[in-house]
Length: 248
Image 1 (cartoon, helix red, strand yellow):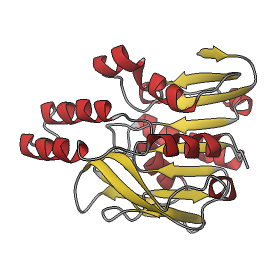
Image 2: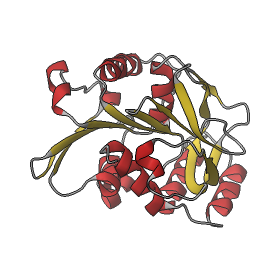
Image 3: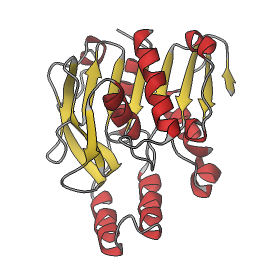
Image 4: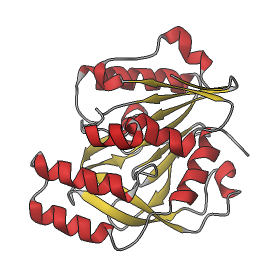
């Protein structure tokens, strides 16, 4: 737990193990999210849900918002912790708690709400991609005066193929039809990684090659594409902070 005063309180559900590199340079993925989202006067807790570490039901009411991270696991899989996370997200939805899902987090929210997640028919998306934002953004985000297209780091091979009826697609790309969605005014999913730096992306490409998830040639191509342009990190930071903290 990291104390930053005593006002609002948030929790990060860590769905992946930290690599040594990310732990040393960034304080783990929790540290990466803290850099993007945390502000003075807030308390941030982390739960390593991929290890089966979940908040007690009685504690859920203490939180103003929740963040779900990326993962190497499949959001359409049936690991015990994945099923437990789906059940928890349904509970948080019924409590109308604010939830921001990133990559795997975006997908698991889609699944929990009744949508369908599968392997992408077009394979991995790895690098920096431009996505198009809908003109019908939630009120809290439309006030940010964002451009209609934003660049974001992508690192995934699964995607939401179908959203539940009440969810609305709010961004898409040439590769992925559901880059962002919202559900009511309290849940938002982002398929890309607004929290990543290009340094983390290049590190992940190396790890994916080492683990035989991708070929050397594909990794080299992704590296080359990643170096061509930068993600719009500041715009994503404003968007994520504004949504999570419910600022109108």
